[in-house]
Length: 176
Ligand code: SF4
Ligand code: SF4
Image (tube, rainbow, N blue to C red):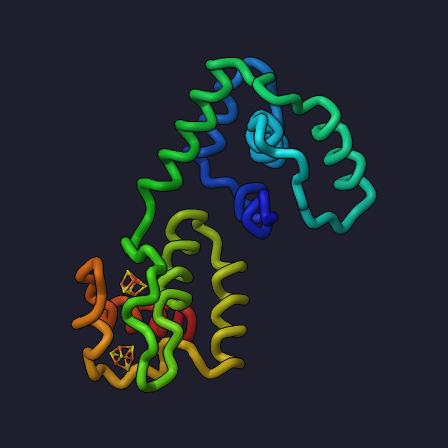
Protein backbone atom coordinates (compact mmCIF):
# COMPACT_ATOMS: atom_id res chain seq x y z
CA UNK A 1 0.00 0.00 0.00
CA UNK A 2 1.00 3.62 -0.53
CA UNK A 3 3.73 2.73 -3.04
CA UNK A 4 4.13 6.41 -3.99
CA UNK A 5 3.96 7.71 -0.41
CA UNK A 6 0.77 9.64 -1.01
CA UNK A 7 2.25 11.32 -4.11
CA UNK A 8 5.46 12.46 -2.38
CA UNK A 9 7.57 10.31 -4.69
CA UNK A 10 5.92 11.66 -7.82
CA UNK A 11 5.09 15.35 -7.35
CA UNK A 12 7.53 18.27 -7.03
CA UNK A 13 10.58 16.02 -7.31
CA UNK A 14 13.62 17.71 -5.68
CA UNK A 15 16.23 18.70 -8.33
CA UNK A 16 18.93 16.40 -6.91
CA UNK A 17 16.60 13.39 -7.09
CA UNK A 18 15.52 14.36 -10.61
CA UNK A 19 19.21 14.59 -11.56
CA UNK A 20 19.56 10.95 -10.54
CA UNK A 21 16.61 9.89 -12.72
CA UNK A 22 18.01 11.93 -15.61
CA UNK A 23 21.15 9.78 -15.58
CA UNK A 24 19.19 6.64 -16.49
CA UNK A 25 19.71 5.17 -19.93
CA UNK A 26 16.01 4.28 -20.18
CA UNK A 27 14.01 7.38 -19.23
CA UNK A 28 11.13 6.78 -16.81
CA UNK A 29 8.86 9.01 -14.77
CA UNK A 30 9.38 9.05 -10.97
CA UNK A 31 6.08 7.16 -10.71
CA UNK A 32 7.43 4.45 -12.97
CA UNK A 33 10.69 4.17 -11.04
CA UNK A 34 8.81 3.75 -7.76
CA UNK A 35 6.43 1.14 -9.13
CA UNK A 36 9.13 -0.70 -11.08
CA UNK A 37 11.17 -0.98 -7.89
CA UNK A 38 8.26 -2.83 -6.27
CA UNK A 39 7.52 -5.06 -9.24
CA UNK A 40 11.20 -5.99 -9.30
CA UNK A 41 10.82 -7.72 -5.90
CA UNK A 42 9.93 -11.35 -6.37
CA UNK A 43 7.91 -11.31 -3.11
CA UNK A 44 5.49 -8.67 -4.44
CA UNK A 45 2.26 -9.88 -6.06
CA UNK A 46 0.02 -6.85 -5.62
CA UNK A 47 0.74 -3.10 -5.64
CA UNK A 48 -2.12 -0.96 -4.33
CA UNK A 49 -1.69 2.48 -5.82
CA UNK A 50 -4.43 5.11 -5.60
CA UNK A 51 -5.46 6.43 -9.03
CA UNK A 52 -7.63 9.43 -9.84
CA UNK A 53 -7.53 9.66 -13.64
CA UNK A 54 -7.93 7.20 -16.50
CA UNK A 55 -4.39 8.11 -17.65
CA UNK A 56 -3.01 6.91 -14.30
CA UNK A 57 -4.94 3.66 -14.63
CA UNK A 58 -3.51 3.08 -18.11
CA UNK A 59 0.02 3.95 -16.96
CA UNK A 60 -0.17 1.70 -13.90
CA UNK A 61 -1.43 -1.23 -15.95
CA UNK A 62 1.41 -0.80 -18.44
CA UNK A 63 4.00 -0.63 -15.65
CA UNK A 64 2.51 -3.70 -13.95
CA UNK A 65 2.69 -5.51 -17.28
CA UNK A 66 6.31 -4.58 -17.97
CA UNK A 67 7.61 -4.79 -14.40
CA UNK A 68 8.67 -8.36 -13.91
CA UNK A 69 10.64 -9.63 -10.90
CA UNK A 70 14.40 -9.12 -11.25
CA UNK A 71 13.92 -7.19 -14.49
CA UNK A 72 15.84 -4.05 -13.49
CA UNK A 73 19.49 -3.82 -14.47
CA UNK A 74 22.21 -3.30 -11.86
CA UNK A 75 22.65 0.25 -13.19
CA UNK A 76 18.97 0.95 -12.57
CA UNK A 77 19.06 -0.58 -9.09
CA UNK A 78 22.06 1.65 -8.28
CA UNK A 79 20.11 4.72 -9.41
CA UNK A 80 17.19 3.79 -7.17
CA UNK A 81 19.61 3.36 -4.28
CA UNK A 82 21.12 6.78 -5.06
CA UNK A 83 17.68 8.43 -5.00
CA UNK A 84 16.87 6.63 -1.75
CA UNK A 85 20.13 7.82 -0.18
CA UNK A 86 19.35 11.40 -1.22
CA UNK A 87 15.98 11.23 0.50
CA UNK A 88 17.39 9.55 3.64
CA UNK A 89 20.15 12.15 4.04
CA UNK A 90 17.43 14.75 4.52
CA UNK A 91 15.83 13.12 7.57
CA UNK A 92 15.51 15.95 10.07
CA UNK A 93 14.41 14.16 13.25
CA UNK A 94 15.72 10.68 14.04
CA UNK A 95 12.39 9.51 15.46
CA UNK A 96 11.82 5.79 14.95
CA UNK A 97 8.10 6.06 15.81
CA UNK A 98 8.62 3.55 18.64
CA UNK A 99 5.95 5.34 20.72
CA UNK A 100 7.88 4.95 23.99
CA UNK A 101 7.38 8.67 24.67
CA UNK A 102 3.60 8.24 24.59
CA UNK A 103 1.10 8.96 25.95
CA UNK A 104 1.56 12.69 26.36
CA UNK A 105 -0.47 14.08 29.28
CA UNK A 106 -1.71 16.83 26.96
CA UNK A 107 -2.69 14.46 24.20
CA UNK A 108 0.02 15.42 21.68
CA UNK A 109 0.65 12.67 19.14
CA UNK A 110 4.41 13.14 19.36
CA UNK A 111 5.66 10.80 16.61
CA UNK A 112 2.99 11.97 14.16
CA UNK A 113 3.98 15.60 14.71
CA UNK A 114 7.71 14.89 14.37
CA UNK A 115 7.01 12.93 11.21
CA UNK A 116 5.57 16.08 9.61
CA UNK A 117 8.98 17.71 9.79
CA UNK A 118 10.59 14.69 8.16
CA UNK A 119 8.01 14.70 5.37
CA UNK A 120 8.72 18.37 4.78
CA UNK A 121 12.51 18.06 4.79
CA UNK A 122 12.69 14.82 2.83
CA UNK A 123 10.23 15.67 0.06
CA UNK A 124 10.63 19.47 0.21
CA UNK A 125 6.95 19.97 -0.31
CA UNK A 126 4.57 21.66 2.16
CA UNK A 127 1.36 20.31 0.72
CA UNK A 128 1.15 16.86 2.31
CA UNK A 129 2.53 17.71 5.80
CA UNK A 130 0.32 20.84 5.96
CA UNK A 131 -2.74 18.72 5.26
CA UNK A 132 -1.61 16.18 7.86
CA UNK A 133 -1.09 18.96 10.40
CA UNK A 134 -4.65 20.19 9.86
CA UNK A 135 -5.82 16.63 10.43
CA UNK A 136 -3.87 16.41 13.73
CA UNK A 137 -5.26 19.80 14.72
CA UNK A 138 -8.82 18.64 14.09
CA UNK A 139 -8.18 15.66 16.36
CA UNK A 140 -6.59 18.03 18.94
CA UNK A 141 -3.35 16.03 19.02
CA UNK A 142 -1.18 18.65 17.31
CA UNK A 143 2.05 20.14 18.66
CA UNK A 144 0.41 23.35 19.89
CA UNK A 145 -1.04 21.43 22.87
CA UNK A 146 2.47 20.87 24.27
CA UNK A 147 2.98 22.72 27.55
CA UNK A 148 6.72 22.02 27.75
CA UNK A 149 6.51 19.63 30.73
CA UNK A 150 9.41 17.51 29.41
CA UNK A 151 7.94 14.16 30.46
CA UNK A 152 8.31 12.70 26.98
CA UNK A 153 12.00 13.53 26.67
CA UNK A 154 12.79 11.39 29.72
CA UNK A 155 11.25 8.40 27.95
CA UNK A 156 12.56 8.95 24.41
CA UNK A 157 14.74 6.06 23.26
CA UNK A 158 16.65 8.32 20.86
CA UNK A 159 17.31 11.26 23.22
CA UNK A 160 15.45 13.56 20.88
CA UNK A 161 14.86 17.13 22.08
CA UNK A 162 11.17 16.63 21.43
CA UNK A 163 10.01 20.01 22.76
CA UNK A 164 12.36 21.88 20.46
CA UNK A 165 11.04 20.03 17.42
CA UNK A 166 7.41 20.43 18.47
CA UNK A 167 7.99 24.18 18.61
CA UNK A 168 9.42 23.95 15.10
CA UNK A 169 6.28 22.11 14.00
CA UNK A 170 4.09 24.93 15.34
CA UNK A 171 6.33 27.60 13.80
CA UNK A 172 6.33 25.84 10.44
CA UNK A 173 2.72 24.81 10.08
CA UNK A 174 0.89 27.55 11.98
CA UNK A 175 2.98 30.63 11.38
CA UNK A 176 5.04 29.65 8.34
S1 SF4 B 1 6.77 18.09 26.70
FE1 SF4 B 1 4.91 18.46 25.51
S2 SF4 B 1 4.76 16.69 24.18
FE2 SF4 B 1 6.17 16.14 25.81
S3 SF4 B 1 4.88 15.11 27.33
FE3 SF4 B 1 5.01 17.28 27.89
S4 SF4 B 1 3.23 18.24 26.94
FE4 SF4 B 1 3.52 16.25 25.97
S1 SF4 C 1 10.31 7.82 22.00
FE1 SF4 C 1 11.54 9.17 20.72
S2 SF4 C 1 11.99 7.91 18.93
FE2 SF4 C 1 10.28 6.92 19.98
S3 SF4 C 1 8.43 7.79 19.03
FE3 SF4 C 1 8.91 9.07 20.78
S4 SF4 C 1 10.15 10.73 19.92
FE4 SF4 C 1 10.17 9.07 18.45
